[in-house]
Structure formats: C-alpha cells, structure tokens
Amino acid sequence: MDEKLAVRRRILDAAAESFSREGFAGARVERIAKAAGVNKAGLYYHVGNKARLFEEVMVELFSQMADRLEAAMAAAESPAQSLDILVRALAQAFEDGPAQARIMLIEVARGGLNVSEKVMHQVERVFLCTAQAVRRGVEGGQRLPENPFFVHMCMVGSLSLFALSGPIRARVANMGLGRRNGIDPTAPLGEMAEFLVGLFQRGLAVPPPKAQEEKRSCDA
Image 1 (cartoon, rainbow, N blue to C red):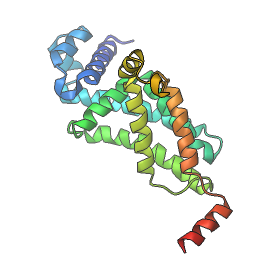
Image 2 (image 1 turned 180 degrees about the vertical axis):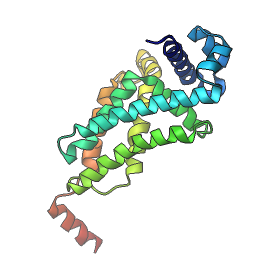
Image 3 (image 1 turned 90 degrees about the vertical axis):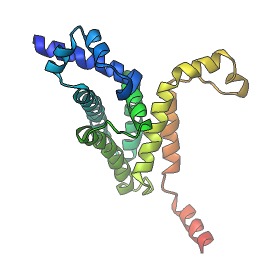
C-alpha cells in the first residue's frame, strides 16, 4: 500500500475507535494522532480537522453497511425473503463492526448535530434497503403495507442496542438475575435476529382470505 494511503488508513482506524468510545464531542485529535503514530500536523495534512475526520469515518462506516445490505437484498430469491435476509445481514454487520452501532447510538442520543449531509446520504442508502424489502413483500402479496420507517427503527434499534448490551447482559447473567426468571441474557445476536425475523413474519403477514373476511364483518 502507498505510504500516504497507509497513514490515512491508520488515522481513520484510530479515529473510528475513538469516536465509537467517546463520540464526536469527547474524542480528542491529539489522542487520535498519537494512536495513529502521527502528530497533529500530520493528521490535518492527511485528512483534515476534527469535523472532516468525523465525516470521513462516518461516511466509510455507513457506506460499508449500505454496500453489505444492498448485496444481501440482491441475493434474495423471493420477495418474502427480502426482509428476513436484511435483518440477518444487519445483525452480522453489527457483529463484525460494533463501532458502527456505538457511534450511531451516541450521535442519535446527541441529536445528530455533527452528522453532515454527506453522511446522511449514506444513512439514507441503509434505510432504502428496508423500504425496498417492505415494498417487495407488499408487491408480492406476502406483507402488509406498513410504514417502512417504523420497520427500520424496530430493526436497527433492537439489533444495535442488543449488540452493545453484551457487557451488562454478561453481568446480569453472572448475578443470576436472568436465569432465575427464565431469561438467558447471554443469548447471541444471531438469536435476536431470528426473533426479529419471526416477529416481522407474523406481524407483517397478510392474513388468509377467511381471516380478512371475518375482520371486515367485525368492523362492520
């Protein structure tokens, strides 16, 4: 790899780690530069100021997530599979790169004040995958025409929170609090993903004709 590209890569990796722990407000350029093996002047030369550095990290993280989800959608063999595949792909993305979930939740909690339009375009790509999955299911006659934004929030919110709650869930398990109540706090993220798949399959399923007729009779 070219030396300039290698230095830039180290800076972005160090910045992603810092932003995922401390958010934009808490991250310090000096610490990021030190972790990357450069001085502040070198960081500014290769990437830019703190705002530019944050934007570069966010664009890269969300574009990678969007690429992964778009590829998963392209591999779906039927409209009914689209949302199932999307849930599993997002869970795997959070499993492979928990920094994405951490940065996302930190910045959402702070109102997204530091999220630029360039980043939002990549976030939109992620949402459009959910909208497409819901639309495919509706057009195929297997899903109800529910608001795709609500579906997206259920999926992203549930998986990101579950992915980041590992340490506290382990603590709960060590205290024996969960198992006494029939709960396994140490369940893996993949299990949560399958729960959401089943939830969406049942909750968004088009009722059989008889059930629809009974509902219309009750409404009347």
